Image (cartoon, rainbow, N blue to C red):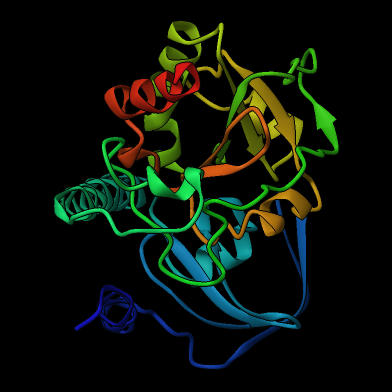
Length: 263
């Protein structure tokens, strides 16, 4: 049974569904507005619905009080469910990382692809849609929160995140530490589609690297991000060396990648 199937199956077990379908012309959540919304149900933390562009889910704590009441939203129960979900996500991603690191490196054409999955411990491309070994998207955002970083001649680690995501917030200290340790070779950029006010209101820890807002999610789409937290590492020439969960890109592997420039 795949993880995706298991997750969907589990959601069906915990869904609460109102007696009559809830149909909304619009549903605004943060900086995003969904149209032609039909609510499918909810669990302790999330609201699930169809809209004009497909299927989506959002945190119940960010929807209106009326919807929260309809689904008996309990902030304490939601916080505990998110904590358990976060722990499970970390364990799952850790198992994937160990499995990828244990596999022998595949041969790939070109100097860049030749070492992506070898001593750096990073996985090789698994599909034609992968950006590994290819030119990455330009770092074009709607607004910089602070000074725009100087990227020329440096590796760039783009971290896609959201202030409402517990797993994303758990990775902030690690990313801050990488920026401080490798400041001469690396620029870490935190990118979110959420509003400046939501980021400012976020509890600790705070982001200590470059930060930007991708309000229209253009960069997020160009990078092929489907879940968060997610990171994308580019070399000084713009070639993507890694894309995926930050768990695989620890200090040891990043140090091995940065050392390649000296060869």
